[in-house]
Structures are given as C-alpha cells and as structure tokens.
Amino acid sequence: MSTRGISILGATGSIGRSTLRVLDQLDGSFRPVALTAHRSVDVLAELVDRYRPRLAVVADADAAMPADPSGGADWMQGREALIEAATHPDAEIVLNALVGAAGLASTIAALRAGKRVALANKESLVCAGPLVRRAEEEGGGELIPVDSEHSAIFQCLQGCAARGEVRKLVLTASGGPFREWSEARLSDVRRADALRHPTWEMGAKITIDSATLANKALEVIEAHHLFGMSYDNIETVVHPQSIIHSMVEFVDGSVLAQMGFPSMEIPILYALTYPDRMRYESRRFDPVAAGDLSFEPVRHAAFPIFGLGVEAGRAGGTAPAVFNAANEVAVAAFLEDRLDFPGIPAAVADALDRWEQTELGSLDDVWHADAWARRVTDHFVRSQALC
Ligand code: NDP
Image (cartoon, rainbow, N blue to C red; front, side, top):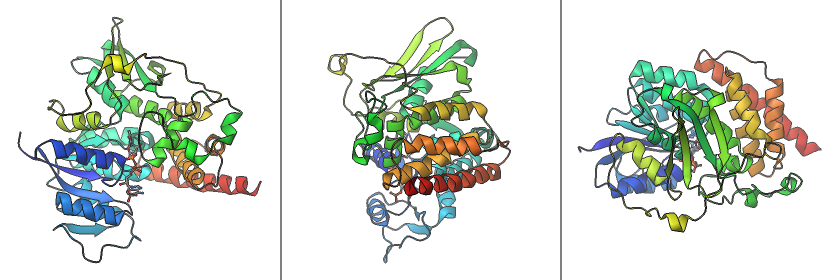
C-alpha cells in the first residue's frame, strides 16, 4: 500500500492521540500531513516535532503561539485554519476528532473537497446530518464512522447488498457510572464521579455525556443519518461490559454483532484502512476473560436527556442543533461547578421547550439555532446559580 496522507483534527485529544498510536504501528502506510489543537500549543509542538506534518493549526485565535515554531511545519492560527487542515491537498483522509459543533465546518469542507472523513465528531451529523450527506454527495467525499457503535454497525453491514435487508440497528450503551444509581442519589453526583467512566477513557465532554446518556441520544441521531434508518428501527440497550459494540438485525431474523475489549484503536484503524483490514497488535479478544454479557433497558426516568435527544432527532430541522448546543453549554457549566448534574437535562429541556422549530436549509440555519441555544442555556445556568 502506498503512503496515504492524513489530517488529524483534534490531534491533542483522546481520539487524536489514539490515532497517532495507531499510525505508530502501521509502518508508514499513513503519514500525518496536518495536526490541529485548540489551545494545547505545547502538546501540539511536541507532536509536530515527532511526526513532522506539513501544517500545524492552533484553532483558538487568542492562544499564544510558540515563540519558535518548530518541526518544519507551517503554523496557522484561527478557526479558518482548521479548514486549511481539512482540505490540505496532501491529505487523502481527514480524521475529525474535534469536540462539539466546532467540528461541523471541517467535516463539510473535507467532504466537499472529496476526502475520506473518518468521523469521530458525531456532533457534525447531529447538528446538520442532511447537509453533511449533501456535501458528501456533491464533493465525492466519503464518510466512515469512528464512533465504536457506528463502526460496529458499519462492519456488520459489509456484504449486505441492500438496506432493505436490515430490520433494526441495536446500539449498545455502557450505562455510564450511574447506571444503578437511584434518581434521588443522582442529585448528589460530583464532577469527579461523573468523570470516572467504567469502561472507556475519553475526553471530558463525552465522558459527561456518557454519564447523562446524552451521548447515546447523539449516537442515535448519528446512526439515523449514517445508515438512513428510521428512528423506529434504532433501538438502544444497556450493556455494561461494553464488549458488544452494537448489532444489526436483518429481515431474516439473523443478528450480527461486532465485539471486542473496549479500545478506540480498532474502529480508528478500520476507518483508515476500510475496505481492507491490516495486521495490528492489540489486546486479543478472549471470550472467557470477557465473562458474562448482560443487557438491560435504558432507565428513561433517571436519564431524561436520552429521550429529549431522540425526540429532537425525530423532530428534525434545527431541533438537534439546539439539543446539541444546549447540552454543550450545560456540560461545560457542570464541569466548572456552575450547574449540578440534574441541571444538565433541565437546561436542555428548557432550551428545547422554548425553541420554535425551523427548517434546516443551510449552515446559517444551524449557526442561528446553535447561537440561540447557547444564549438561552447560559441564561438558564445563571438563573440556577442564583437559586
Ligand atoms: P478531547 O476533548 O479529548 O479532544 C478534543 C480535541 O479537539 C483536542 O485536540 C482539542 O484541542 C480540540 N478542540 C476542542 N475544542 C475545540 C474547538 N472549539 N475548536 C477546535 N478544536 C477544538 O475529545 P475526544 O477525543 O474525547 O472526542 C473527540 C470527538 O470524538 C467528540 O466528538 C467525541 O464525541 C468523539 N468520540 C470520542 C470517543 C473517545 O473515546 N474519546 C469515542 C467516540 C467518539 P486542545 O487539546 O487544545 O483542547
């Protein structure tokens, strides 16, 4: 295989660093051509020294740039520079591991430029699924999921000739650290408890989303857009061991599941090498060590944000963008101790209640809904602090 260029957006984060670990093992089959960070300039400088990309981007326009930019890369700063990384002529693949709606413009730009987008940034599809798919079609790009559940479904669907053969997608959810907590006890959740995920090590935002189950709602919407399945045919089941990453039920009653010990390196690898598989050393699966596998229904009353998100997905238009932005603001407030745990779904419910639905025709519609939801949720958070 010849060397393929890859831009890693969010290289300093959890998925970005896992991607670089994957590349370390692949003997030069892939070469990083652009690496980006938001504010972690020092970490980015170390990565540039080590991986020698052509372009290094610091997305935050206010972050202090290195005094002596090193590593032989061109250094750029600001949100627009992310687009340069997403459309770099030497990049065949763009791995989007940005967090939040901030990743959307890069996904669209990369697809329009005909790139393969290995998508971890699920928020792109949540906020603007139809626009992302249109960009893919018009630009000739290709969207491959990195999220472990969606990679599992994508892998189970290989060899499935027609979507009409699929009856149902079953997304698994670990249930997060509070799976067994009573509703009353959830009022006392502390930040440190919520940041301790039982089966996955991830960035702070997705870890909190996993604790509230907002992450699973985002994933249901992501699956709807990725696989063109109606919401009625996407089921979510809690599977605390995180061994089965998701399942597909076919019309003949067969069910395929993709399994393994939790590791993001496998879905990242598959998104890069698809449709091929490459030899890779990681912890080998051992069914006996995996032990018993169990399944439970989602506890909707304890985790109301899950239902709110799925309903926003069903409503379509700009409602999912409102759900996402309100959740981003509420999670940031929780992480800064400005909002308690039950305040996260309450803030999101407040924004969705107030939003007057609009159609999703362009990115401007998304940004309008996003900005509105951020304002309203910020106001909600401040009002809670005064109580
Ligand atoms: P992290 O918080 O660990 O990393 C986020 C990356 O994006 C960092 O490089 C960060 O830079 C950069 N970044 C943050 N905010 C901005 C911004 N506003 N503009 C530009 N760059 C920004 O996140 P994760 O790696 O955990 O998650 C990334 C995406 O992947 C999310 O959408 C998440 O839902 C998804 N995902 C993550 C999984 C995981 O295991 N972590 C699993 C499945 C999906 P800096 O370091 O400078 O802050």
